Length: 383
Image (cartoon, rainbow, N blue to C red):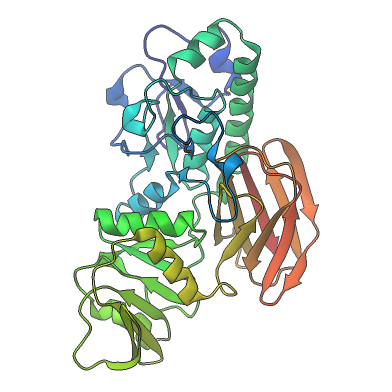
């Protein structure tokens, strides 16, 4: 079967063959990679997804996180969004192996179920991934190890769930926070931190900025070498444009701060840092603060290693929230809010049948509680 970089479930096994029946278990879209030349250009600089472990510790970082210490997550969804902004007609295919290049330390044990997270990390954000199990997983499958087989079957179930719900994934995030990417490492890292901090940004290319839209509250443009007229049009229309480039000579300063200044422009404003932004994580929090927490696209609680993204739905009356959990399964209520007032919310998960959720109105947002969060969940909010 020819490889479809968008829809195929691509498995790189290396030497030898998978155990009998392993490929069949993955479903009809599973393809065993025989020749690397079959693959198009890939995104190969990703990190093995999950929660980083503290040096010398056998506990996950999310298990030792406190109110002042949050888990550090390796996630690759932002790479897909940045790639699609610059190359909208090319497939976004992640391809990294469980090795040091992907951020794994020497001797680090790779959990059998992490291959499911590799797939979910890619598919939930509208891309795909080449699945490369490590030698330990391959040996355990050949030995019919119970835990390895369970992880393999769960991977198959999750892959089939993504296929069945393909129309829900890869849709544009709602544009409340719009992040401009020019192909540089700086703007890519700003997008990374905006996703990680729960900012749910829509990533757009610097060379093809969208027209002003009343839904756009903040345009993140730090890292750009030039403040273009098209960028400033968003401020004139009412948004806040954030830059770390030199402000215009004719702009009216309305609020100076310790390291940045606010300038009035048209119906909106420009927030200009006086020096280049050096801390992407703190910058992401600043961007969300400008949007305000009450007007942000989505929020999640009780799942410190989860990243939520709010996207446009399959109709104008629908908004989707995709929640990806990079840590251990959360076996308690997970609180999720989304911007907008909705009449119905339906929860979709690979491990359970669809379920309607009770909704609560919280100002301009709608709130639901998920009964648990394993790896991935999609919530369909309908007006």
